[in-house]
Length: 237
Image (cartoon, rainbow, N blue to C red; front, top):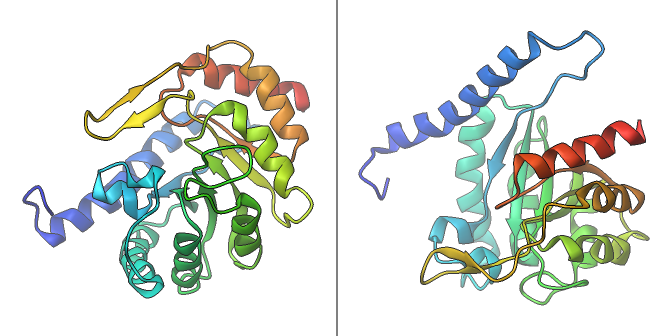
């Protein structure tokens, strides 16, 4: 809407994003063997920081109350749920208060499943410095949450983060790291050293061993990396 669209058109585009993904999935499925699992379409529910477009998804200092965050998320959830995705991907959450807000908002949509994944700054903590294990505890109590985990976080942090919450997690982990670079908000670009494209098979195998059951890649990962992760899946089977 900030770019000049009406509310009606903005909502239509959100629903269309789900429909386009569903159409591509359905075409892909036409060539699948009958034994192949049907891919799912997860509607992305980005964090409030991504809406601000100032890098706040890696900081989490929003200045909003719990109720304000819940109301903001609830409006978008209603539009996306209307488009009938298979599930919701509530992702790149940097702080506990946003997890609590999503728990409140998701309670209004009990018939759709969701995962919640967090952006983290080190082996134990969310971007705000709060403990990842506390985030997992919040998601444990969300009835329609089917997984909890980490995304858009350096790949070398994934395994220790999962291990830090393994003992309390009551849901499978979902992980999809970025390449390990840092987001520079003023220049709107990734900076720093990236992880090479090698050994993602080994990384994914270790994440699986730590409890991850949904594994993929986030910002800056490549088709070659996703292919390695898929090979890991095939080996586990």
